Image 1: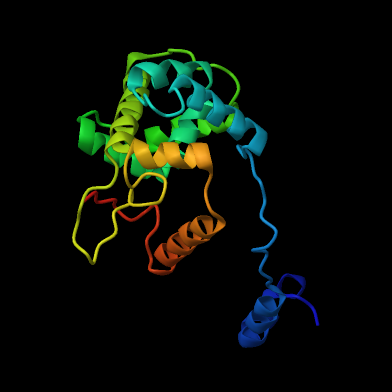
Image 2: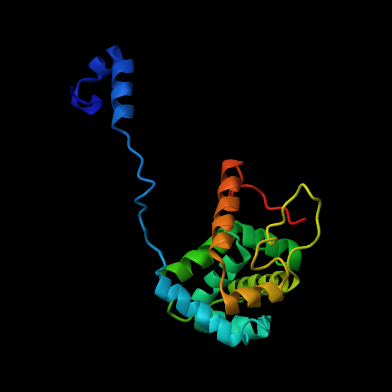
Length: 211
């Protein structure tokens, strides 16, 4: 049978249900085969940034802006590593930073910074403007504070975003994972929690409320 685009419009209009069914019958899911897309970061580059951040902070004993910020400019991929430690999307990190530091960072600005680094993770950043520098510095400040503080106590029926195995107890839990590694069951549980959040309708478009 011909496809809708192969027949006159009058034929499609007269047999609309048939052609709709035909189109849907051709749709297939490709969830097992995901496109990398532009800006995909290979593990080797990510791991290089992680190891650089680990060295600069003394195996995560001194996660402070004065140690992290210069490294971000010299090796930009470390900013992506830092965000992954938090478990935030660029938009969520922007919101969290604006709330915590008072430096206003739009979601668009955060995504632009993130994408710029993803497109060229090995090239050092240039200080092109005070505004961009202030935003990057604020992101780093907020991340350092959050990682050092860990997850606060909240209501039993709520789950704080930093209450995950590697950040729940601040730098203590972070160092433990960096030095000893993560049990496989922990990795699986983190995937489970992330999957449950998605099924519940929580996404990067959902406003982040830090309790």
